[in-house]
Image (tube, rainbow, N blue to C red; front, side):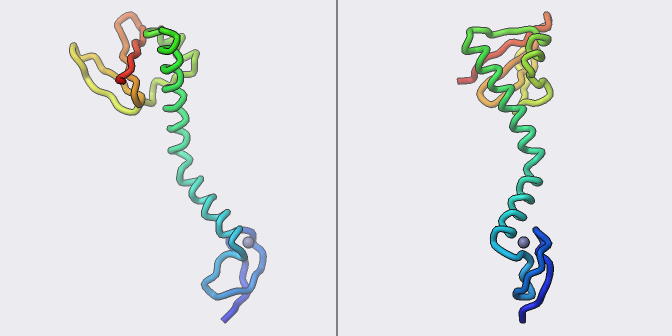
Length: 117
Ligand SMILES: [Zn+2]
């Protein structure tokens, strides 16, 4: 039996089957896209940071720059708090990975990069 109610997306009154929640396919799609965007917000933010860090390392290595001061690196908007993994190497040095790249800090405050490929 058809009943009248408000669309969950646009609020318009519509008539339809009692289990229908949206007035049209457009409203149903908009609503589900909105929910998906909200769910992915945190993940998208982290992905953007990792992607920017990766691009910074890629560009530096492409210019032949294999180490740089932490201050200069942070001026390039590198985010030191995000990386894809980390591990301990010889002498207890910690290597941080950003996808196919890795870096470590040396005692003089420089960051050294390399590519795993
Ligand atoms: Zn609607």
